[in-house]
Image 1 (tube, one colour):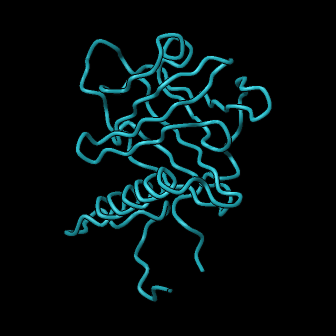
Image 2: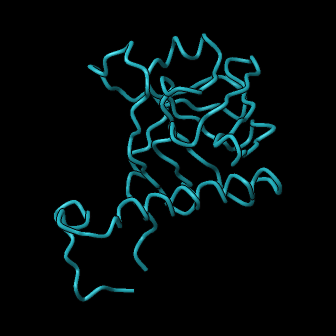
Image 3: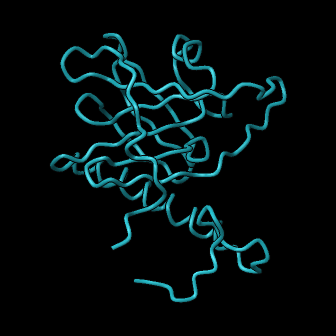
Length: 176
């Protein structure tokens, strides 16, 4: 589908003077796509080559991860849901997902509020959805440094590795 009246500005955003909140609507729709994918996988498993990269703010209120991971990733973390994850659950009532993963041979449960998620990607289809960063409601920490630490659980030994998501950094599905 093409738009002969494309008024988007440089970054693909909508005009600043829009009286309709298209950006908000699109982000809400993209979050629903992500949640539907999680729900499908929680019931049916991952089909074919699909796997998910999930980046989230570890300092966001409600994020529940082991203290050793929080110390290692104080601001942001990326996990990969592919071969070694269990008990993926989506709770729309509490607005969070939970999943069990292995880090360095130690099983851990992560609880992640929906609004803590900043990126969802499925490299099998080159899909990458980026969400506006919601600021945590705590004022104890100043956001003077922002860095991305990306985490991957290896299929072979359960150890952690750093991975790059640069190949998947685009917003929304490819134009068809």
